[in-house]
Image (tube, rainbow, N blue to C red):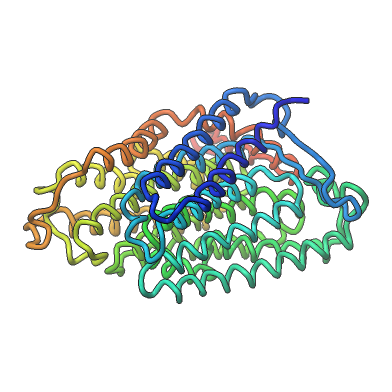
Length: 509
């Protein structure tokens, strides 16, 4: 039997969270060390596994499968393809960064630092499980369970208004989750049944009645659209992002929200390919509206965290557009965008967290001239802002370009309208940087200190990834492309042939 890499990688943070929960509340320093050590060990194990992944080998690798609830055909089944692998690596890289960024923030929450860190570390196990599950029932169980630590991170460790934000987050998620549960049960009823009823490999090959497939698609799509979040199911995000501790916001926007777009690609397209095609025009409209609406809302925000939340709504619209373009460029770009968005937006949120710590305010107008007193902070913020507006040479440019090109080859109007989002991105990112970093030094930030050594260690890997993937995204795309190709083949799609212009009688034809 091969080494159970995925089980071990998921079990390490779970064990760490149990240790944290058992520590005395007064042992704050030890709690921080345990949390950071746990996430670093998880990262090391994931890297050790990833270097053994063969992009040209079997689609799902490092597979594990054990019968769990045999009477219903439920298995403890794990495996990763290229799409799941890059999202897994994204998760395990971000977690130690966020723990280190929360070094002092965890002490200022309304409850103990060890409870905050235990919730954060336990959520890593659940997110890893969501990305690597190859049994639908197991996926659903983890999909719902990950709401619990996030709810308490927002509600118990956020601001004075966090109770409202956490309840809104929970209600949206629970309602959409119930619809997905109904769809899972219905799929079991009309599907193949038997001992492998929920295995992804089985469900991929089920030939469902057309009307059944469309209704079931809606159940899954709605749950994933809320999680993504896709307009108009997004309204919980600005409140949750603004009222959560900044570390929680990074995990919420950078990682947890990717479960929605991952679900579109893996389950909506994988199990209901025909229904996915049938609903594509509606989904494209929602995605395009999300791109423009999120950007316009971001321009009008006066709160830094709410601004970034609306930026993410716009970006998730682009990711959804790429998924439902049904082209290799679009879906590869969408998957790469999920990874790039995590580091780009994560860097923005972390630096904003440093700014809030210095100014004790989230208001854009409460800053000004910070580049004169904190040049390193301002420089890293500028890099993150340029990544947010997809400047060539930085990571998001490649993924955004692939999404738009892939969409244009099949849906020209949708791609053309979505391109407006690039112009609007320049407006809100440059406006935010100008208002906070340039101009006269605001009296309240005159004595602000530049980044400390710990803060530099936090932001350095984020900037490094932003620059590296901007110039050399090929290693990630080489891992993603075979899985995307398998998805396209399963949905019965291929890239549209290029249009060749030929000259005849002095003209083009």
